[in-house]
Amino acid sequence: MTTEKKAEKKAEEKGRARAGRKAGAKSGNRASKWAAGTIALVASVSAVAPAHAVALPSDGTARSAVGAATVDCSSHRPGLAQRLAADMAKRLKSRRSMASLALYDRTTATTCTYGAHKRYDSASTVKPIVLGALLLAGKGNLTAKEAELARKMIVNSDNAATTTLWRKLSDTSNPQKPNPVAIQRFLNAAGMRDTVLDRTGNWGLTQISAADQITLLKLFTGRGNAVLSHASRAYALRLMHAVEKDQRWGTPAGAPDTSTIQVKNGWLQRSQNGPRDPFDRGDWKVNSLGAFTGGRYDYGLAVLTENNRVPKGRPATDGWYYGIDTIEQVSRAAHHALYPDRSPSHGYTPPRPGRAAVKQAMTVG
Figure 1 (tube, rainbow, N blue to C red):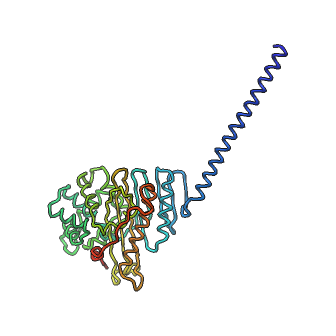
Figure 2 (cartoon, rainbow, N blue to C red):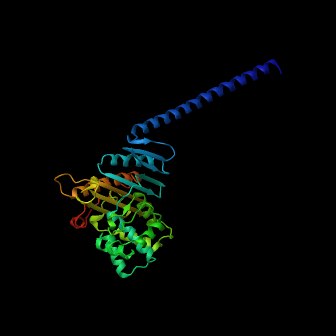
Figure 3 (cartoon, rainbow, N blue to C red):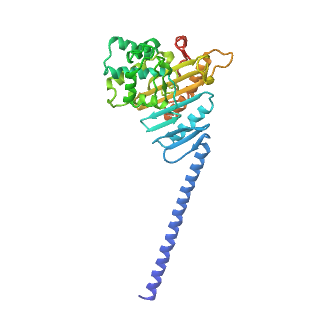
């Protein structure tokens, strides 16, 4: 190779090296800008992250503290678990009464729990369980009288109708202590292991959990026919959709206007002279479970509360309304977090219970 050619080759190699360094510098600059953008984004998200969030992991789960307990959520939708846990915890922390909740959303594979296995007095929230047991016992076939009683029990929350069906589904060998064997069979079939049926005839003192109430809603809204047929499940949902207007409070608060709402609520006041433990004398137990279906919606929420106290000198119903407010604040947060574009800040606004509902309130010892 001549000296001239060697010089040309060396110059060419130097040119390529310079080009490589320039390309690397440009690439490095682009990488730096991307990294800076990412850091800025993370910083901005952190700045607006809810103050109640304990953890914001990247695995689709979140935990937010409420005193010594936590709201635990998981979701396949990015950021949803964090938003739900933080927003519901914020509402719960502002309330004086005790509460538990459970939530599922099949569309986003989302679940949330807070004290979900704690047991509460059921009040009328046991009535969909009675309906499920009636449908299972009759294999979906109800007599005209049974259908009439079932409708009164769910749509009107009629206590006398519930007592009649409870006894029908019980072993009444001892009339003073009817043993609800057919209702227990339904619980076993449905996998509702937390629920403890009352065996003294006071069905409103059946012990339920938010987790079991969600199991029931999943059964009613699911596709499996192992426990109840499609026709039976659709029948139960139709009755829950048709509840009296003044009994549509609770978990429907804030629901998307385009969803189909199925709800059943329960409420009772403990007697001032009843339990040995003065913990809840005169206090209200207020519960609500709702299923939201139709279109893209397929989710459910159960919120159970107790220790809703009546302020001294105030009407007895103040404790009831306080429990309703607790449920509705949590529910609005849940609906809005799940579907912010279809559940505005207020969303569906349920009516307040009327005089008829007040008369149906149970007072037990």
